[in-house]
Length: 187
Image (cartoon, rainbow, N blue to C red; front, side):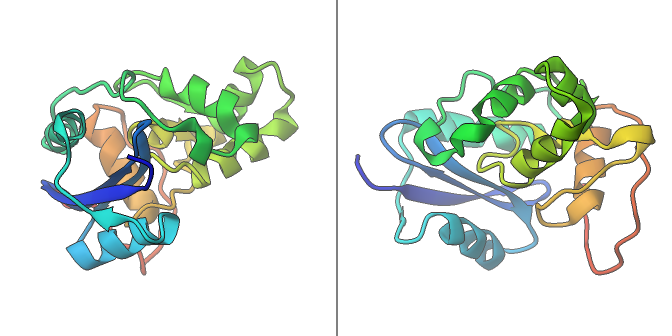
């Protein structure tokens, strides 16, 4: 399968979307309130992708995501991801963050330090998290800002959604900046 394909699916938090090709998952969109929003978001990343029935390995990822948003402890570390669609400069950051387990958090600066970089590299970590093509599979929600703050989150619902995912994993609520225009997941 040379071109990108995708599928939408229902979770307890809304409608999510997953895109894949013959190598692995190329895009994952966290749940949005409706299918149109999820599909539009995925197609921005994968223009021209075609909606198809997923093969068994992708159905397994979908089933795991459904279980995750239902509150089950799920690990996505073995899900194949197509690295060709990732920014090569962010590959090391994604590898490190992908190894964070259920309920395990770190900060942008913590990732920088773990990678042997100085505190100024925390901005690059933040940019990598914002551009993460496969959130949940690369669990960017587990990377927070310094000082107990939640930090940004570019998924539907913004920081409120990030806080809800962390709460789902049993992590205490980091401080969330109020953003009245953003709606969070409702579990």
